[in-house]
Image 1 (cartoon, rainbow, N blue to C red):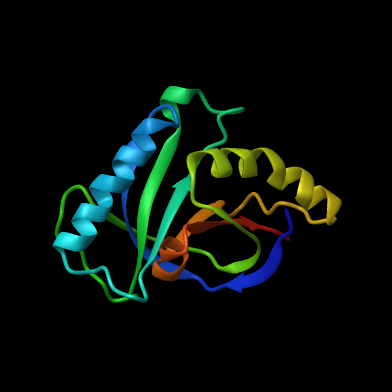
Image 2 (image 1 turned 180 degrees about the vertical axis):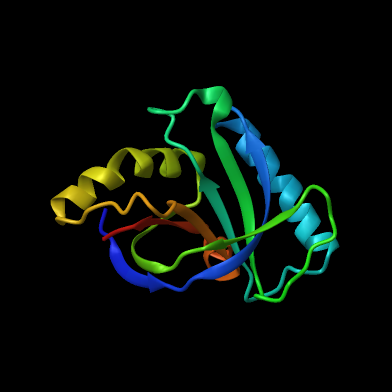
Length: 151
């Protein structure tokens, strides 16, 4: 597993949040969020969808872990849905791992990425979240990316 180093720009996101143990509820939230995105005609060939696990379950009780399903939106985007919020993500350098978009491959990647970062002598930037990134091109080719912020 090899990382490609990329600069990801700061961006504005619209998101839905799930609080509780990571797992099937994250997938359910993502499906609900994608329905909202499509019903609001926000999905197109340039859309970027993000999944963000906001908390490390090694340090946060599972019932308090936050997972966000997000869409990158224009800076002037306004939302009028109670279930959707707006926020910003800080850009910077990321180690980007392109992986097969299967539950097994994603789970395996999560078990390997930190060792790979250590092997490549990169330090995790804990001030920014790790992003699971999905674009139309990636999805159509059965891939996704795990983007790990590095210093």
